[in-house]
Amino acid sequence: MINMKNKSIDFWILTGTLSLFALVNLLFFLLGRLSFSWEGIGTMIAAGLTLAIYSFLYKDNPTFKVVENLYVGVALGYTVIITWFNALKPDLYDPLLVPLFTGKHAQYLLLVPMFLGIFMLLRFTRRLVWLSRLTFAFVIGLGAGVTIPNYIHTFILKQLEPSMRPVFYGGETLLPSINTLLILLGVISVLIYFFFSVEHKGPVGWLSRIGIWFLMISFGASFGYTVMGRMSLLIGRVIFLMRDWLGVIQ
Amino acid sequence: MTFQYFVPHPYSKAFLELMTRWDRIIAGFAVFIGVYSLFHLHWTRIRRKAAGWGYSIFVFLGAFITIAFGLYNGGEAFWHDKKEGTMFDWLFLYIQVPAGATIFSILAFFMASAAYRTFRARTVESTVLLLAAIIVMLGRVPVGALISQYIPLAADWIMGVPNMAAKRGILLGVSLGAIATSIKIILGVERQYLGGGD
Image 1 (cartoon, rainbow over the protein chains, first blue to last red):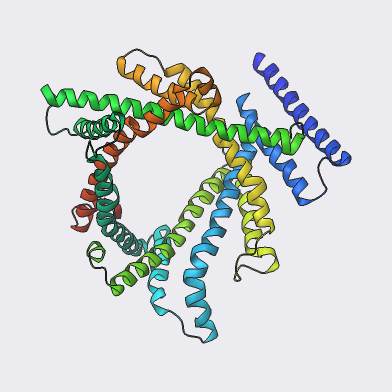
Image 2 (cartoon, rainbow over the protein chains, first blue to last red):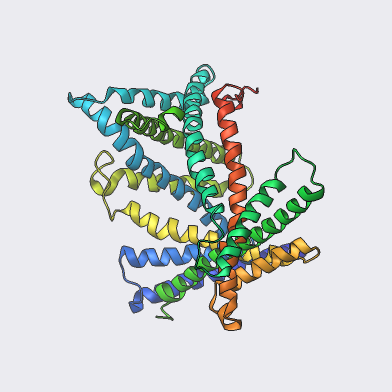
């Protein structure tokens, strides 16, 4: 009985909110607050989407689910089109397929990645699924080959270099020198914490404990940084609603 | 490709560019696997009339409208270069961008509520985590500087020294792991990516 009553209340809240939204936009269009253009309609739709998603803060509801699914669809469509215009068209269609059908000089070598790409799609068939393995072997092999030198250069040597700076260059204040030592201590202690081949007892145990402290500070800092990033997005959306849609702030 | 890096000859560099281009083309085809997978999932929901199947229609609606306008390309068709200011761009600007930003901004509420429920300074380590999070959060807003001029400085120091040291340690460990895995793949020790076990 209570459930039925709650559903009825939710229905009226949803209907009331949608009606209010429609009325407000109608007024905005009539008063000239929103222009009868794609820009004006776009602002109205964007405001509707924003409010529909925020309605989830009250409760999971149909408007949120509709917008959520619509967003997934639009994002998928956008990815397909951008992949065509940024990868397949300039790298395959223009240099291979267009010259092939117009009698100009085509880059026939591109037939190899084209067939490898098509082989990958054969993963959905039963008889030709083995061909997709050729593509995966090529992609994974290429990735593995590129990874080794790139990781050594970018993530090991380039990261070790600033960790092993001289503590004193001469002439600087004490704080940068302490920071240099702290960074070195942090890197070594975190590496020791993740080194499980030695039992974490004695000096190794102490260093590993210091590593945990550094990790905890890092996790806390990352959490705080992420929260503030999301907060700035929230502020951006509220500014959009207040300034671009309602026009209550300048 | 590993040896290519150590041979800085123009032919070697051209070979790397060619392979990167091939990789880009194959990645382009890989997108269609994702498309098939998502369409298959939602089509199955609709076909079986699963709970909430009606919402899956909006996935198809959004995708087909966006793809149709993308292919139409403002009247110039998809085989020409991408035109700017089309309905496809409008869909991106007024649907994808606001919906995406709002979905990510809503996480601020969930993170705050999750933090309130789970963050308890029970041990020294969790207290350190909590303090670091509070200082970084306060250091990024004007109220932090209002409380004390040292809070933004402390936040910068946390980000630049202990946070960077820990991140660097993690990164070094991850890199060594990635290199070890790559060597195992090249030598044929690791073959799980082919889907047939070891």
